[in-house]
Image (cartoon, rainbow, N blue to C red):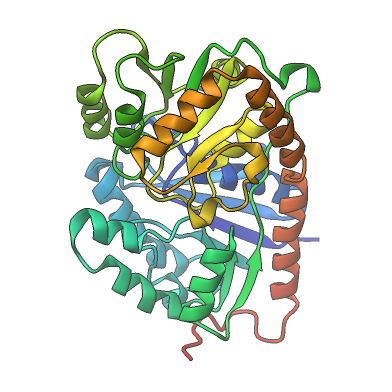
Length: 371
């Protein structure tokens, strides 16, 4: 018996040297679990060294956009997807929405039902950065999707406003819990930022301003980004060795920096879910962040949330937690407890339920529904 085919598309990939972000991790984790029930293909944007391959039962196909560079490549990837959809007809196509517009022509041209996977609605952030009406294109483009998977209430409201008739599932991300023996205070060696290097969106300039040249604990910035963003970060680093940029960390090294940090800081100007925050919480680490709507899933017992973009407030929260081990260990225990509510298997079961509900519906395709 042939298994239903499921496609997921995302520009990023976990091994992409320019990004390799949380969204790629989400797609990988969900795809591997869906592959237990379905025939799964993931379309990604190419990068140097990428090749089509099968891993953990998932077929990865890299569309040839890497030559355009990481940013223009995202736009080209968005334009190529509808062409791929003309020759592929899976039971369901999950499209992880891609910057800079978030939306694409895929639901208009695909012969398969398309589910918008909203890991980021970036229109407002793109307008702030470039002064162009990306948010207008996004708002109108969302009307062409009739099915959504979102991570939070804010994006659910945005999708509902764009298309009141849409079917929307809110499915938060998951995390692999480390053993109890690896979760907890650890060595408390450093304050950690872990994520994509994008100085503006990720608020790294705000973090560096708050930390100064002599933070109470060393600050470790781990992650990768485009060459331009990494160079921009290096220019902002203060003299001395109290604030260090160590680049991308994976595997055992990523586990070590999480295990041995005192707490994580998420200084982002814009976030959707922040998978790295959940990973830190799984290691029993508090998370200091700005009080952003899309980070509302993090309970205040798990770390301080300060007024958005208030550098003085961020500095005070960091300094206070750095010198108070009792308080941060208490918050770390709460963070660990909270993280146990998020599991990849449970999330994947809900994605599978979306596939079954669409495949069994009377109108499985019908992507376009404009109120």
